[in-house]
Image 1 (spheres, rainbow, N blue to C red):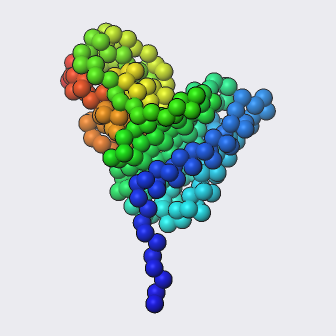
Image 2 (cartoon, rainbow, N blue to C red):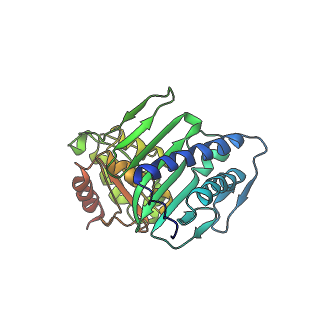
Length: 271
């Protein structure tokens, strides 16, 4: 009699594993955070990578090799491995420049995609004691520095003039040829800031912002974020309105104002 196959993991199983991966990552990344002798190198694309980026991704991959050896993996530092429909997508330290300067706003991003669609996402920011997570159909959640776990929901703000937004980086918008559109948007909303990296998306999911948008993003920058925003009731698309993770842009909103924000940007761009 042939051996019985193990049952396929459920999303609950996958989310539990993603949270354990975040635990493993946090233990490694915090060891070298704000270290005076932190080793930093420059990658071919002229961005920086620290010893902690590499060690954190290795720690995550080690657990995946043991617990999900048949799943594919895409990581920022060590690239892609495997060719299955289930793929773990990892950014070991999102916000490397903050990390290397001792600024505590950085995160480990862990996602599971199935057929290219994000199903599970975890964003862990150990330096400020925060974590957020979601799985499709299971809602979006956070744990606070005090240890409280609670569900999160996007805001109900339904007027552009009352909205608070994060545009992430003027340089990105300028490079995309959309600086006039950004200026038009900032004049229309109540408040605008460039918080940067993963944290403003989490504030959006918690109902503290109504829009976070940026360019020049890779799959590993946004795969973990998308399901958290969506499960919190928001919308997460690319600038072209598609759900593709490889479109090179992100446009996350509270959902209510998604089309209104798009219209303001089109007007500002003269489109």
